Image (cartoon, rainbow, N blue to C red; front, side):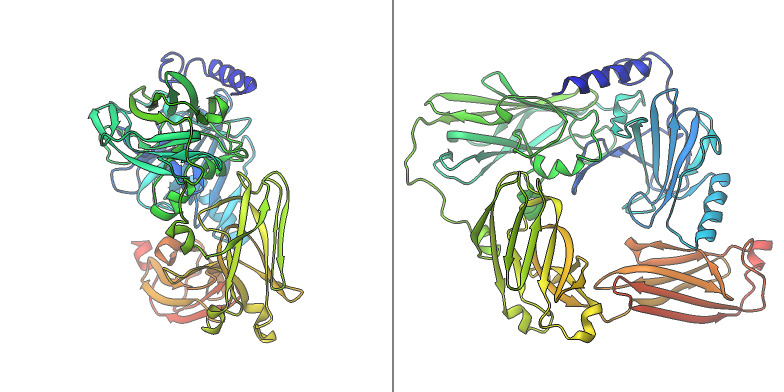
Length: 592
């Protein structure tokens, strides 16, 4: 798309002396981050919730503790420990290659780094920490062990999340363009295609609603639409496909490397996943059919671009990928999907143009639209402007470019919900939950039903009535309202959290002290543990509701008994405490 981007990629490729790109093959090779054949459970650019996957997920044979190696000479530039996200993560600069490598979800760092991190955690009295060592403080050599694989942070199973980034711009680069010798002989598979009438006069089979078609394989890399019916199209129409890549030796559904769409052999759309910036990654919600993702967990990639989609992955767009049909001819739509190894698949779709359609043709309101709040369009909100919406008991303020296209905003409220006793306000239906919002907007709900004594415990919740669940959305009292920032449409109401988290002993022995902790409303926010009045490092694993301390006799003073104090607070400052005197020799197992 952009000349400067093509120039940057070319110069960067040359700077790697041929290392970047499996087709290059020459120049210095990078060391593999693991010692065993690499098999992937996730690849670069894969469609994740609200973001593109920024690296590759390397399987670690179902276990943790595998040695992880530096891919080249360099120095540690950043160390981060978090209960969520990347967990234990290490960042290494490689100036000679113009790269930063990232190793995430680690169980632990190499001993020198591990001790440095632990010293800082004790100094700051915090498990979560982020460090930026000086350039010469921790130098590493190519192939050196820098840590051990794990399952920390938001990881859902043992693996190494590995990234390569442009050192100067800190933009993720596709690691699969390097020579890692990862076998891949399987082309992408295409499962469905969707057609979208775009605009008030567009039609698909005489209707204004989108249409989904099932796809079947002709052979391993050629696909066709099931059935003999040919969709009739008129006006501006967009397309999307549901397709995934697969690699040898792994059943995981991965992302595409490139996707092209042709209309009668004329290229209309082309994107390539070589790199992206973290700034633009949330635009994935415009690339995909967000409604299908929210409602049915299906990932359709659009081959047309919405007006405020600022993704920079597009190599070529003709008319923003929008096709226009105003004849009575038969047209062939061709989709070509490839993976990073060059395996490709094609899907052929026939459509029949219509020169004219009946003025009365269209869709009645769909059940899905009725189900989502029953509200009426009350305001047109152009995406390129800031927008606001106010009623006596609710205020909304949207910044410029909060949407991907102009929104016909809908609103209604439910007073019955307040009478149920769960909420301290009406239940406000703010547009449709399956319409994506790119930027945070301010939301204020009047708290007239809220007793003064509860104002400091009140927050705004996003409510899922079908699942009977509540998502904490923050909030603080401001001039008679509870106000917060969010970037999701849906149903919102004021709730109150007066209950502290729960603490239950799990394992207590000479080597480890652990507890199950949980909070069902505003969520666990902070935690601190003390033994004989001395702060000790408790680590938090939220996906398992686990808080644990690995007994560290190098820091814990020896005693005949150990008085344990544990404090866990939630986001509304409700505090749970736990006290116990432990009568055991914690040094015995460590001295043997």
